[in-house]
Image 1 (spheres, rainbow, N blue to C red):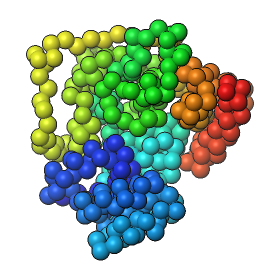
Image 2: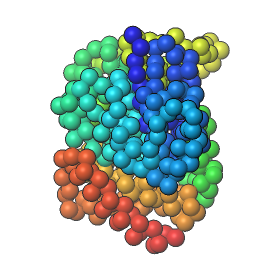
Image 3: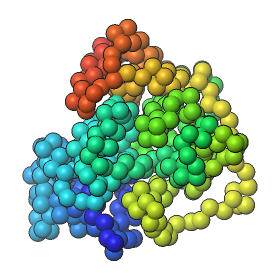
Image 4: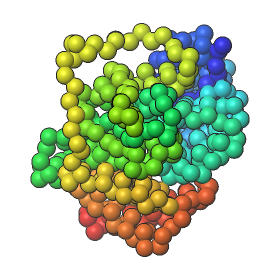
Length: 388
């Protein structure tokens, strides 16, 4: 049976991979709406290629350019936050939530409705407002299906048993571009060097989060909410080959793992048609040709952001929300050349410590999360001049 689909973040790396999956399976997948950030031409091109009914640009100033680019196509369009929310709420079976950062939280939440699947690639929805978001999804009858390769692999591996029998759920990390660098060398790394991910092609911010290992910390918080596993049953292991994406160790000693070549089209296809696997014309995993898979523990001395994220998960309350907000501000400052690599973790640690003194409760709703997010961002911005 054909499924209708809306893509939030259609012009980003996840959106581009999703476009390839959809074009290869037009009989199974139709497009209701697409959402982009500020590139009107790129969004119009995606909307035309996929035959979308509606296109929305987050940047309100680009509305006229989008309308012109879609002239004669029959695709309706809009711009600004209201148009993005409209796209998220239009009738469709599946919403692929791939808007990067906290900006994706409100439209992803707006997409929740009975019987709908949310193919979730926006981890901030769960990092910033995990308990409230999952409670609303349950109350409204929406299914959350993870798109990140690690969580998608865990979702499949966890099907092999009951949650009560899980001893440890483990996500993998490539180790990023600085896996073998000394701390002294990492301290002088430029944003360009930090953005050079050894395996995945992602946006600059996510690449830098991968270089600091903050991305893995955020994924642990996401896994906690997705799978209902407490911090003590979640872990990270470094796996440079990026073939094993997630592992579940059971209480009887057995391990179930999810393996695939590092191509986001694989977890995207699985999330869109879960339990109805789409045939994919992709290279097959040849373990004999690869020959060797290696694993190592992450070094939290060289990569303190991972330890900070683990501490935020353990602390609970609003700490994950604060952690994410401070990190986004610090990474932006690093990308702008205003601070150094280790100033990112220093900034995040100081902001989290300041908020910890107030023991801020977990946000009870998405609006509450956005208020805490704003306060934490302002606190992080005030610290930036000290490093700059």
